[in-house]
Image 1 (spheres, one colour):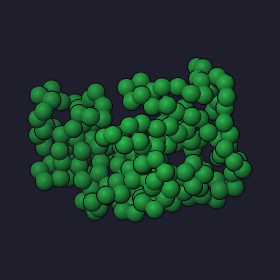
Image 2 (cartoon, one colour):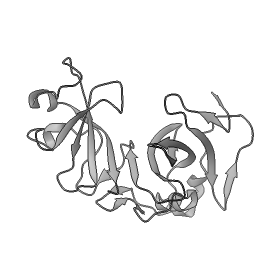
Image 3 (cartoon, one colour):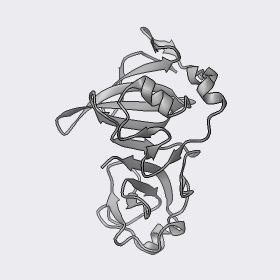
Image 4 (tube, helix red, strand yellow):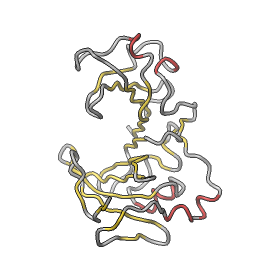
Length: 207
């Protein structure tokens, strides 16, 4: 599939740029075929790097003091992904978006105010776990006995039913659960229904 250097993402209206980092930033100036190659794969950072983990402080080497800068983020993510960046308006403010790509799939997304710090990270990479062992695909029943007091219904992240639950160990981390639900959109599924739902993404927030 062909992809241009500047394009708009459907639904979120972002203007994204594709960047590869090695000794600097590689800017593509024309449409090109999608490539599986990533500069990060030949980076020395990748030769001895361990798996990324999510903790109360952030993800890997990324935390609330990390600048929304491609080279800094690439280093904090240990050169694991091919990065692309763009901007969007949120509540009247200009927000930078950096997406970590692998096999043309978004595996991680970081955001923060323009010229600011990272304040939000969405993790979709199944290989990234929390320091407590929580990972994408883990069922609700392994973490919670009940939704009351920890979870709330949300429909803002996907077309399928979703519930967001605060991590027991950290106020900065939450888990997005998805699963089958035939009830009204505005109602929270019962605990009996939720027990088979699974984590589809992990979210870290600075505040």
